[in-house]
Length: 114
Picture 1: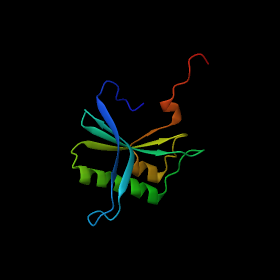
Picture 2: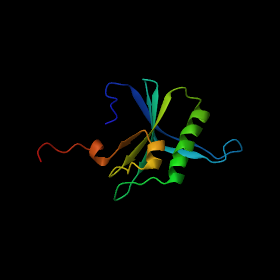
Picture 3: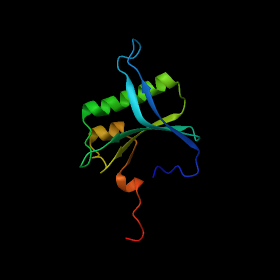
């Protein structure tokens, strides 16, 4: 669904504790570290309807991405990817904070028998 078929990748979770250097800590649900010099930071949310980003939540996602880059020292391109059950509303906050989104339909292909 991300269009990375055939690209080697490693997956893991990541966190940075709050410290004197970092006013806030951060936790990333799923990091997809790709051999094509890109990283997807996946934020996973469950809602019973499309997820709506607020200004504060969008800002937190940008801060999380920036902290990941700072702490890991990565020189790869970092994408913020939102994984939700029913997608996300593409409002003004979404557009400035999320690069890709995946929904349950993207992750689970329907059974061809049905």
